[in-house]
Length: 166
Image (cartoon, rainbow, N blue to C red; front, side):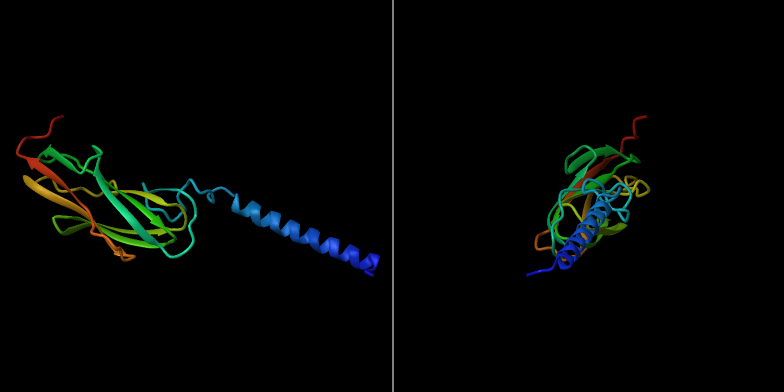
């Protein structure tokens, strides 16, 4: 038979465990720890959505679009142009990628992904896609790490000789 003192000690220990668990849960619910916002290490403009998935980072899908929502656009010379990558992934880890135009690097991306399943990654506002040279151009996002098991997509733009409209 267990003594009354032993039972009191057991209840006290269980209470302390419950308090420790409540404190840990409260820390998880602190501002900045929600699943709908990017972690503090997120690149400017990056938006992460989805739930937490265990395991190492695996990129499962990559879509590239211009501001018009499509993978092709025609625009006058010296126009402003931006692109966005939409990545579907599982797990967490470091994403290293490089935006390229006609095979030349224009922006390096280093993004720590700790939660979510979708990442919208626009070009940085300071990155300018070259539109000074008329003709066709190709934009890609080369994923340097982690390795991907699919062919990387490309989007295309065509620069005309026309002057930009104001």
